[in-house]
Image (cartoon, rainbow, N blue to C red; front, side):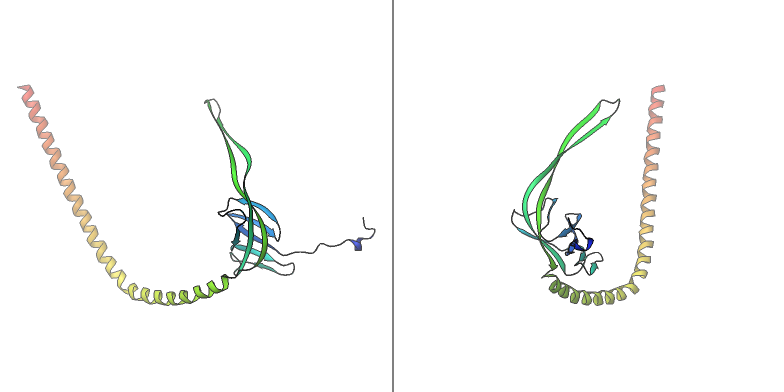
Length: 196
C-alpha cells in the first residue's frame, strides 16, 4: 500500500466504444469477452459490427447520429452456449390454471479484437453518395411534372367512382326490395291456401 497519495498509479484510459450487437447495446474495450444473443457463424469465425453509437479514445469522444460513420468493432466468436435456466410460472388464482415452463437463452461468447475505422465503409459511402444525388435530381424533376397532372386526374376519378358506387347501391337496393315483395306475396298465397 502506498504511503503517499501521489504514488498511486492512475489507470490509463483506454479506447472504448458503445456498440449495438443483436439488438442490445454494449460498452466494449479491446480484448474484452462478452456474452451476446446467439450470432450466426461458427466458433472461431470473425464478425464486424458497424453500428457503433459512441467512441472514445480517452481524450476525444465521438457521438454518432445514430451511428458513428466509418467506425466498426471487430470480434471473434469464442463459443456458442446456452444461458442459465429461467423458470416461467403462470398462475390464475381460484381458476385451477398453472403453467410452468423453462427457458435457456441461446448465447454466443465473443472476444473484442479491435475498435477502429472500417475498411469498406469509406468506399461504400462514397459510392452511395453519388447515386443518391443523381436519384434526388431525377425524382425532383419527375415529381414536378406529375404534380401538375395529378390533381386534375384525381378529381375526375373521384367523381366517376362516386357515381359508380351510388349506381351499384341503388341497383342492389332495388333487387332487395323486389325479392322481399315476391317473398311476401308468396307467403300471402300460402296462408290463403291454408284458410281454404
